[in-house]
Image (cartoon, rainbow, N blue to C red; front, side, top):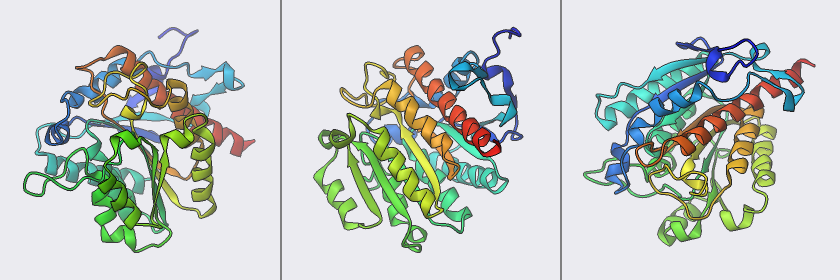
Length: 313
């Protein structure tokens, strides 16, 4: 660190003391079960290495926004990497629920997208409010379980929609965002349709020219209901020319700038209590994809700092 160029990594401390707490989920067994390319278990540690030099702490583009004045960031480490996937899911849910209960904003870096059900379940079992779960993903991830009723990277939101607690509040919502029809079985689409009005799909073709407007509309709707929000971001929704290091790359998809803007608006919404990133696979490609993933996190932090600054002014 030099005094004239302080970066995000320079202000992150270890432990759970931050207002935003990073948690790593170093597992890709769920990807293997879903016949994807393994390697995402290395995502959290690769993310940390690249995070060290990501982003300026004082951002002149946002009216000299100084992150240190409005929030703190800590690294809460990884979920134990030596567990079975089922045990890891249990540990993750307990960990995230504890952080939320202590007023922290967990930001979880995977790992496979199977992490998203334990994360959603942690919020669902903590809050007394309604919740919005927003899945930014080329895929719907509502596949049935496999291998003797085991979860996998394609099943997290099937598990959420089969969770009776999710149905107890009629104001709960599950939103599929940037889904690609070429990647989504009609059976899975019809499954989601059968769960209406709890569910809604924003197809990529309908939002590709301006995904930010509908994303902000979703956030506003949740805010008006005072719902708690979980944003789950599977980075295979980003076009592979910008984000090749994923388990299932997308030939078409969100741009890198759109992904960062979405993360900024997620951070800016104080109703967002939790965010995760899934499917970063550094064994396929580490640097370009990894820098984008850390920039997505940086924009989430920027959005949250700006929201707090606006409240204080």
